[in-house]
Image (cartoon, rainbow, N blue to C red; front, side, top):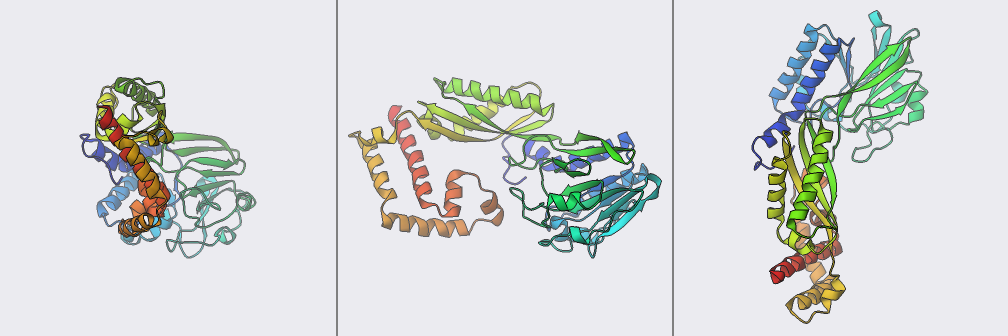
Length: 407
């Protein structure tokens, strides 16, 4: 939840607490449904975070399940492996953590269930763990807990690589997979399932987030139901403004996109990014006034129903109706600037100067910013894409000048 704006009262704090509230919602659902047990497939904590209140909060929730006589079976994932809370916090007796030394089996005789799992001993587990899992227990519903990228998923390190065929051939009835933040049912009978995380944590994790309630009858999965635990929902909405004639039309289009996303969020706090697209005469004006555009969008969102809405960012993907070639032919200061910038993109001395200076700045950025930056200019600077950097900066500068010239 880094980088949240503090200019919308209360929203940043609500988003920061959302992951805890999502866990509370999960425990509430488990108690309400009187489930037989709860499975957690790794990554309770985010890296080597020393906030012990987070660990205490987790223990408190596990004690609630203990009071309801609901056991918990969990494995540690890559983030847990580097976290000192994982190693030092005492968990209540209803929680069984699978060993990190070798895959083990835990039987639940009351339900004829056998659970198999292994925790990560270190952050980067780059070998296949599946061959080390025990054989299925006869007469039981066999469940495998595994923290894996399953051969690779976008945005996730390829830890504990394995294939879907290996999992389905193991003889288990259900594989509960962790690590990937998006929910996905990869196979049925036997079931191989990523539940995803309980709460979206950034604009890269849009849509509903949930746990799965698994109903087993006669030794087979009879029902797999998503239990939405998220208390805040992220949305990324494209807004076509090619038909907009003025700023008010742009605001109306953005408001319509917010209203649609609010309805889909089903009463939850909505954090939304708006991406403006289309070819429009307003392109230069919009680039010239990003602060006003965001402020107006947040003001418009504040008046949408009773739901709380946080406009996280506005991304401009519009194109001007006046092409660069036309602007280049103008015999005024704007045309001269266009020609100078075109020449700069091909000047080796200017490119070398930019590469040298920008590289020095980009190398000083924190790792998390370098990894997650999605602003086109910042991404170009980090990746060393000088051409994209010059072109993007040129578009911004010329649009600002054009907007001032028009006014």
